[in-house]
Image (cartoon, rainbow, N blue to C red):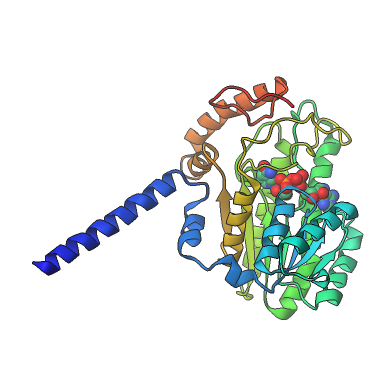
Length: 337
Ligand SMILES: NC(=O)c1ccc[n+]([C@@H]2O[C@H](COP(=O)([O-])OP(=O)(O)OC[C@H]3O[C@@H](n4cnc5c(N)ncnc54)[C@H](O)[C@@H]3O)[C@@H](O)[C@H]2O)c1
């Protein structure tokens, strides 16, 4: 009788656990393999403490937040972007919030477009720290313009920064990882790396190119099982990406709009670190309805076209109204600020 009672309690607990996890998945902000790794996988603290991590685009948004969370985990950092004073500011904060010493954080200005400087940048890191454990290809720019209105120069610039700049730096670092037979390359792609988005035709093309490249490179590295490639695909996240986006012309950026309704940068970075710690190959990080659209896109492409068409029309209308393109699909409009 007592055994029966114990069994009932155990079954009750198991059922409660499953229901809780189901609720969690329904409110999910990541794909299922990512959420599984968050619940049951290795912790970023365990995997990343003491590792040499090179972050590009570290001067703002996701890259800046990555630098802070990695510093707190005890990772040794290389911070790259174009503006040295912004990188110094990020370094200073890294030192304030962590136990890192000045010599544990290297500020290394780098322009992704200047590909002839990438080899010497990689040599500088190797000279300074002796190794590169993780390269996070995060630097990049987005787009807010319709194809009919945009100059082809914008398309060239997006490919130069997001695609060619990224694979150029990867080539310089990969040589070293192949010699060591280990390392991690993390690419901040986007959900537009595998689905389409109006106003971002050139951006989506550059991120599709990145994903095609890294998914193929991963197979070329089959004989190096300890060299890991992770493609990170975020949906809308709070950052300066829209302020810095290309518009119709290369030298024109959009008016500032409210970004506060998007996923907090800290949450996006927290999930990215889980994926790096657990060697996940591709992760999706997005609030709804974007995550649902990602699943639809994979499993029911024709239905997905129907819904992305509806959402996409609204996106263009928001843009024409001077709002953030992603604001107010289902609710009242966010104002331009
Ligand atoms: N925020 C989002 O909604 C979102 C969604 C999906 C993907 N992403 C991707 O995340 C990455 C980080 O963007 P973010 O959202 O933090 O935007 P952000 O504009 O705040 O940061 C971009 C970073 O890239 C750097 N950068 C831009 N051009 C560069 C160049 N030529 N050389 C070197 N560095 C350069 C910037 O200086 C900055 O440090 C980008 O690759 C972006 O495409 C962002």
